[in-house]
Image (cartoon, rainbow over all chains, first blue to last red):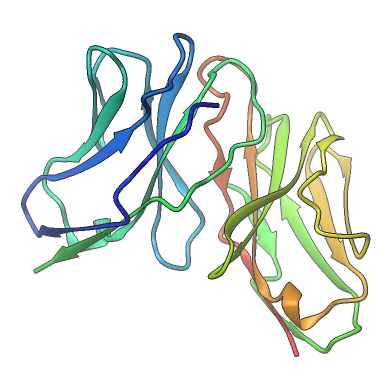
Length: 111
Length: 116
């Protein structure tokens, strides 16, 4: 699996958009980008995934650059409840296999 | 669906005692994963099953750890004998195969284990 690089921490004001970057320069053509988050003391939660087109769901938007070497998870209107560790993972989608979590980005949303 | 159900939520035991953690995956999911989380090591995959069969147990730390999945709706993770360094939060997760399901894991609330 391609390696990902994320900043260790970020801050965001409540109500503003939180933009969480992820670098995956060695991504291969059939690998998707997955995002999970873990709110303190809870199990990780799936957010969104995509291949090359931008994706949006009720939780977030995923923007993948044209060369697919990086992506950004966007929380359009961050709330205090979005304070969590966010993990970016690159995987082939059609084979369920061991999902390895890195250290992620700790997002702190402040009032 | 009630999601992935884990029990107990909290367990405090003494060194040397046997610990059994339980997990009920989401109905219809054919993959089950056990993870362990500590401050020092983060989230570690211990073992995962497909259709009740263990596929990869390379993350199991040592012979004191064992996991079983006797049927599609139940799995256990056992530690015998337990040691203080086993103190952690243990998460169970499940998913289903397929382009939309693969790698989309649903996690339980976790079992917080403290070994004194």
